Amino acid sequence: MLGVPIGINWGVIGVCVLLFWSLAFVSLPNVAPAHPSSAYWFAGVVGVLAFLVSLLVHELGHSWVAQRNDVRVVEITLWLFGGVAKLEGDADDPGAEWRIAAAGPLASAFVAAVSLGGAWWVDDRGGNQVLFGLLVWLGAINVVLAVSNLLPAFPLDGGRMLRAFLWRRRGHKAPATRIASMIGQVLAVALVVLGIVLWVRSSWWTGVWTVALGAFLFVAARVEWSASQARPELLDETVGLIARPLPTALGPTSTVAELERALCDDPRAPFVPLVDASGDVSAVLPRESIARIPPAQRAVVPVRSLAMPLVGLPRVRSGETVAQVVDRLGRGGHWWAVVVEDGTLSSVLVSEDVENVLDLATT
Ligand SMILES: [Zn+2]
Image (cartoon, rainbow, N blue to C red; front, side, top):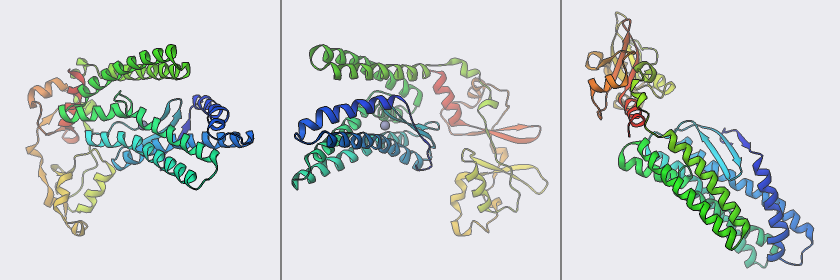
């Protein structure tokens, strides 16, 4: 769906069996008594299928917004505690991260509203009480999905929204991840404690479920927390490892439309090298400069009108370490440093990539 492969984890089967049992043998006979058991069973199966669709809608909400923010979705897996939409990398700005995270709970809230609206409609018309009970149940399940995912415990959706917020406030992602995943661990422990209290004092079923959810969350938050710890050894990483490769150079007669195509094929390249008449790269064609040419003229305007001289850009060697580059070029600015090897412009070091490494390397 949306071009995304969808998988199901075997744990979901267990949850489905439990849900079927609670629907067909407990909830529906309570809400709508005096129906044949076959009606409860049928509604139980429909309910379980609707639950799976609800999980899918939640994940498709994330996927849809991710794709609109240029983050590729590798696959969607439905499993024990809901679904996981596996994204290729993270969003590169906090706004996109916030929107992607918020989309899932929003989709669940929408399904809840539709189900509860349907339940009201059925009841209003004096319709079938089993159907009424089923729709209320589905609405409630989706409210639970929306609300529990909004818990500010990274890596849950609410925790991702919290990280995006901290990321925007502090300007850096790694420290935001550290704080959000620390809060995630604290909340996970709180859930386990709450689960034990529920287990002992009221419903063992809700208690066990809450303990399991807390334990799962703790492990997930712990993994993210360890991954976001400072790794000073990254400062010794070399330019060659983090520099971005560049697209093939364009010639002096190429048009702006060709430049646009080259950059579209290579979304991480900040510019395309430009060779002059003698075959040397003496200038670059920055991505932002395309906007200066109206779209209608791009097929005829030659790229040299957008050229930015190569001599203006700082140079780095691919064997230099991140620490050495930062010593020389400083922190915080926006720059491109070109890597020229054997006389050819081979790749570019982008200041944001260096900042990302520094984020991960230092606290
Ligand atoms: Zn979600």
